[in-house]
Image 1 (cartoon, helix red, strand yellow):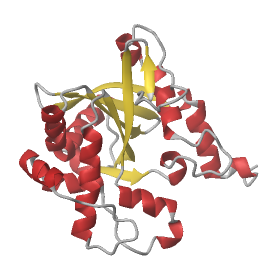
Image 2 (cartoon, one colour):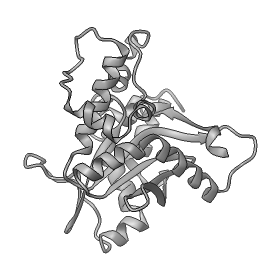
Image 3 (tube, helix red, strand yellow):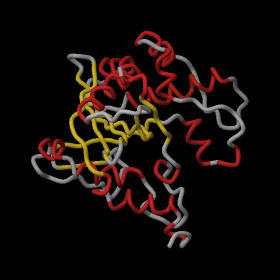
Length: 251
């Protein structure tokens, strides 16, 4: 019922593009996602209380978040075309971008396998149709899904419900599960067939970073935990740039 009123707002570039803020070493979503994971009761049970840390180097394919014998890799769920638009705000009127989660609704598992078999080059500097751009964006996402690691997919949006009545948290999470399944179920089945490793999804809702686990047996996402945004100093620092505080624009 309420899922029809679920809306999303794409996150600003400061929160999703590494190095977007000049001279700020913490401008990296992997850093604040790691802090949210370490603030998660569910994941701390998973790691038996051992915090995640970021490896000093990833030259040998190390995961982004390591904790003892358990590791997670992080993948941003935004299309390449949308990230290019965010990195070049002056070009905002040129070339439509792919809303990746919406584009995935056009494919079942068989269609994704066909797309994966096609040769789709990098669109940078090339003139292409919207359909070609969408195919390239989806194919890049499929390449990420084929990563042979446990994954946390960071859905780069702030989610909210456009309703006059307020939803209790449990109801809201149930509606978000329905929405995520509608958008990502086929691509998650694709990953199960290709890799068969654990997959999680995280995004922002109200004052929380919320996390969902993909359950292959039921072919659906299930909400597992929430962490308050203020648990991440890096996230709060990046938000202060967005508000202009770091540049002295706000008293």
